[in-house]
Image (tube, rainbow, N blue to C red; front, side, top):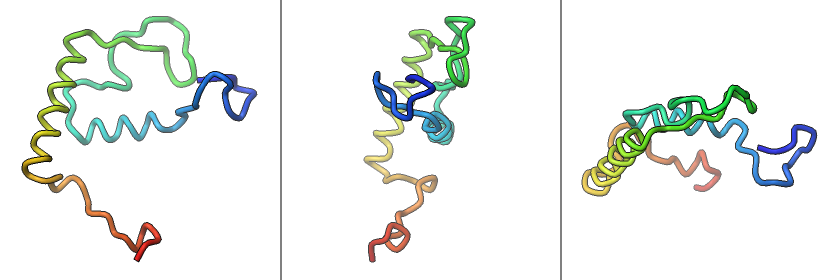
Length: 94
């Protein structure tokens, strides 16, 4: 989002490669819909990586339900095996 010639957009923040990280995390979480790359294109224009997309109400509801169930389980059972513990030494804290 923003002007390509500017290092920082005057209209907001630039998510740049964050989309790939979000897509990875959502896929690892097992969401039933590809939130980042799914849905139907709403224009023929490609802004950056791909054209803007629109998820249906049912798709959004499915993802919201899936994430709510996952959040409930993690509060009850803990984060589970897919989340590795943080090693303070790797964070510069010992």
